[in-house]
Length: 322
Image 1 (tube, rainbow, N blue to C red):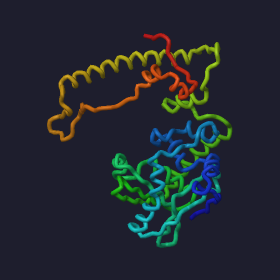
Image 2 (image 1 turned 90 degrees about the vertical axis):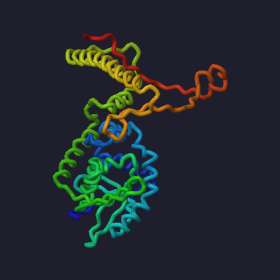
Image 3 (image 1 turned 120 degrees about the vertical axis):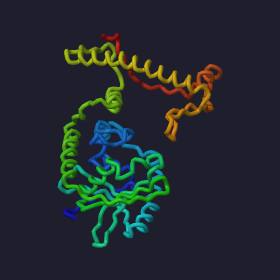
């Protein structure tokens, strides 16, 4: 290693609350692709990360798939030892970059190569439905995650070992990219400065931005209003025009759907000659839904204890601009 990371004796396994609190004090490996706008949408982006660091949002919660992945780590580590021929060691601590203490990571494992060099090992349990993402190379958001780990640990390379669909094991070595790491350090430094100075990242065009705005301002003040300046009047006009265009496009899309549905009649699939897979499917299915409206109407006393009260705000555009 070119330098040794600072070791903080805390782990998710021993004390998850303390581990989560320590994560809040740093930019972690899973934060890096979110800040860089390349993480899957379900992970959230820089606005969500900022709220988490400020304690204004719940820490990023693991999905059921991620929880299963944690249970699978020992098995995947054993497969790595068998296939690659290198021993692995759990890393039940948090590591911090000594030169850039806002950067930290918790590794799945260390692995030692034939020269006695310890390098990070990232273990992944990948669902079959995501197998196409791993064709050819490691997905970009995981490459960023690993480069962040290399930035923290100072290691010359790392391993990432995905078990795909439960039956394909594709370990890959990822070399340290100092140019990319320099860019990551600068990006994360700017982000951490926003956290320390209490300045939220700029609002962008993402759905995440809307969700964050609703979280920051959950309630309205009765009677309060604002005047739109010239710039915001232009924004209002563009929004209104876009809504008209959206309505016209929805009508156009519905027309195309209706023509195809009419042509298919009671058929389940539609093909283009020469292609093996259908381009449209129109299959029947049965569902059972609980009729809550009827239940409340017929059993109001039984339903009463299950009502919950919440606050929300509805955004409406009044009028349309041509």
